[in-house]
Amino acid sequence: MSTAREQLVVMKFGGTSVEDAKAMERTAAIVRGRRDKGLCAVVVVSAMAKVTDQLLAAASAAGRGDKAGALAISARLRHRHIDTAAELLEGEQFTGLQPVLDQEFNALDDLLRGIAAVGELTPRTNDLVVSFGERLSSRIVAEAFLQRGLNGAHVDARTCIITDSHYGKAVPQESAIEAKLVEFVLPLVEAGKTPVMGGFIGSNVEGITTTLGRGGSDYTAALVGGGLHAGAIEIWTDVNGIMTTDPRICPDALRVKTISFEEAAELAYFGAKVLHPATILPAVQKSIPVWVLNSRNAENEGTKITAMAAKCASPFKSIAAKKRLTIIDIVASRMLMSHGYLKAVFDVFDKYKCAIDMVSTSEVSISLSVDSNQQLPEICAELAKIADVKMEGHKALVCLVGEDIRGHNGIAGRVFSAVSHVNLRMISQGASEINMSFMIDEEDVEEAVRSLHRVFFADPDASVFDVTARVQVESKA
Image (tube, rainbow, N blue to C red; front, side, top):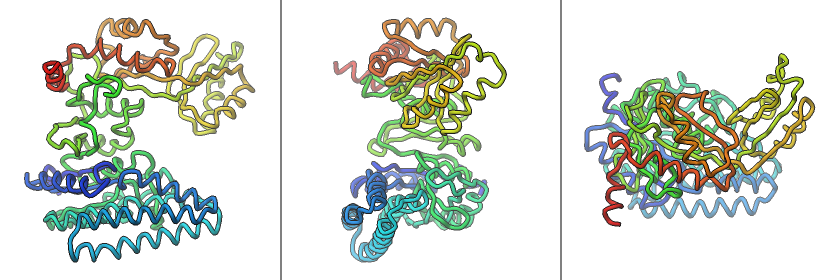
């Protein structure tokens, strides 16, 4: 396997990259391009765009006893998948695949009827319903590859991605996954085939279907890449890569050519939606580079994510913003310095499995920010037993990420000068060398991001950022 490591690339295509027949054609062309370069590809696909949401809606309807509503959603999905297959495939290949798709949808319909009859939707059953999206898309893509000379071979991801039984957000068992990949996927690669599997889904040791949670298809790609010791992992999406900020806020945002795993994970956690931080960990651990690429613009070089950050003259690589946060102020002047007080506070958040984004303390108070969720009243009620509690919603966290921020003299002054017209609530830098962040009102996010982007990306380092796009825009203007 070590001799083939550099030739093996794991390619993940998101929902918009397989949303219809035209998108699947593009995907096949991209994979052909890799094979033409002498690379071996293992392909991981998401469900077709919006299908996961519709399956969740069908499961929810069935759980409420609305059998007709659930089956109506399934019928629409059946037509969409069969129509897509009919457009992609010809002759015997379509007539061979159609009964397979019908069989899957018949199984889905039986499952929905069962849920409606019982009137209860369990996490385990919900995982089974939602798994149909990737099971179906991977079948169609594999057949499309086969017809286009790419030797597509369908692999049911549940035979390889072994997890625990935490339904909805199952934890992969990496040693078991590696063994299964060597057993089921590697022989296909060595036989010159292109294995195609669904992302996001797996199974526990008993063979019961599980799902990996948010960002699950990226996670599958990283697990497969890690398990097969691939030379690279490619995440194909509908953007040109990681940008210096959201282009909807700053039209002159630049593509970041290269970024470290640590920086990318920080950005992802704080609002950048290109990647979910946990999903690239298996690649980090084995120093496998991850590329973020655009299936609608395959010629673009995208963003390369590597173990070590490239040298950069600019202090920051990107600015992310995370909205819908709540600040909780906890004041207990007599108890703050007493032993066990901080533990008592954080135990409350742990009890409700509520993640904390930022913490700031003073002599008499603790301020922290959390995702706004329905359990905040209960959390505050428990905190009120040990302290005075105040809650403020509609807040946002702005995060600037870059390597060795501490090494740039006067950087904090430049940041705060750029947003001097915005009211800052909480400020954090000391916890991380690559992240400077602060809390503001949600309504001020766009103005703050634009101001920061103007200051810190006015003269970008061309070795790290794609400045050609900006030059082209300016020349046209």
